[in-house]
Length: 389
Image (cartoon, rainbow, N blue to C red; front, side, top):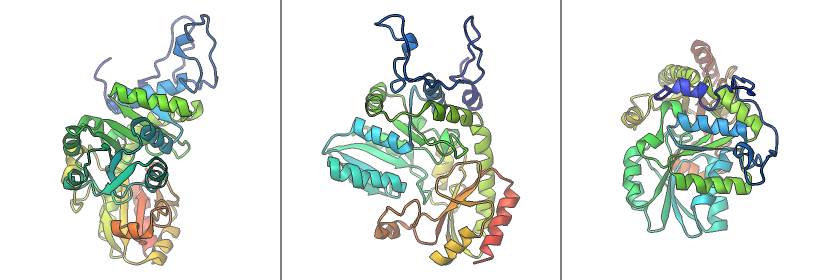
């Protein structure tokens, strides 16, 4: 059927039961653990399968579902988000190329850019505040090949006007990549806004249960897809059949989960915004957010990520996060359980201290991944922890 909605795609795409003669009628896609596939004819692989590194039935089912959720023609599932990023860069860049990227990227992405690709492959990166389109225009060079956006960013939740930026750089032949991990396909679809590539850490909201590491790339450009798929197959950066099954399972509740993440987050953001021990609350759903209007324009909801700056220093921040009962002190995000962390000594520790200070990633900055627990319990937990500092 055509034009089915997001929730229906999340459950049915890629997993239609085979009830024909000889079929097993599996309601969910089975885990295909075979590394290789037999064929009757030397020249014809059975159903297109030869070796699981190149193509696997469970991973293929997941990739079909991922593509549908981002309104894409093509999708690839990787062993991690970083494997997806690495494969993308290897596929699309050459020595001497230039990349413009958001300045407060996830620390692991910055590490990959500045400590792997820049020194080893002579690919240059300009990290700018992409929330201001003029910064991008001023950073364009003749050798600029990629524009890499996080929107919202990690951890300062800055918003970039994806449609306006993608339209501006497209005329220069620059490919726009959007890391959509924080929003998930439920709340934001960058390809619809003009981006060329969407990237996700499936470990986060897409899987949603903190029990699978993975990454994904979606695109409507066949040439880009084939280049990245060639690198993925060549280096073996594939998602395993078991993890593919886990993500297929997690996606089925993505819409339901994201609704609760968003509902809980706005209530918690409003509570924190009024607390005397919280200096600043950063959440796209608050009218105080500098790019709130852009967020309303390009997103269907505001997500489950909140960052706050406490009225204090590192000791107060450590006391706060250590006093919580329902918010696990842990890196990562997007699971059904609430998580909390301090970016400066944790997820962004690899970012130089002076750079962190310049960006505003202070020692008292706290990043919260709001889960789907009862919001009253979460607010009460935050209140009792704040009372202890």
